Image (tube, rainbow, N blue to C red):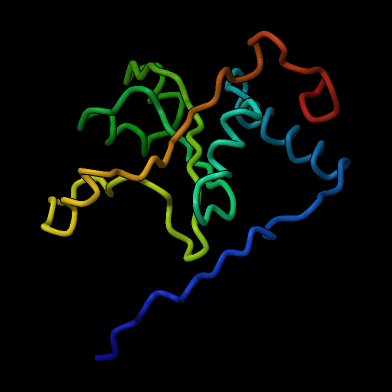
Length: 156
């Protein structure tokens, strides 16, 4: 049996591209229609973005979707029955968040220590002089937060 290896990733910082405003507006409208009442955008200030981008070997920012409240076992089973049942019958609350983290040229997230891994002897140097990688969350999701713009992307 052949063992498949993950492809080698090499990020350069040039990933991504400028995008058409009309198509962007159409896609954000589609999202607003499919997810009424949910945040439609998130804002990160330039100071936190610059701090993350200034980290050694940081080639860009990776964005994660997050939620402030976990689901219990019963609620997780209800997710398969649809958003309405999850929100109403499952009584799921909490807020969606966006978390950003720097990504290095080898494609790995720049985290101080991967979660769930035990410390090894080699980690002792990191305990004495830890790297100062940073993870950040948005300041406020739109709509409804101060400064949420009205434009083609927000439907205003």
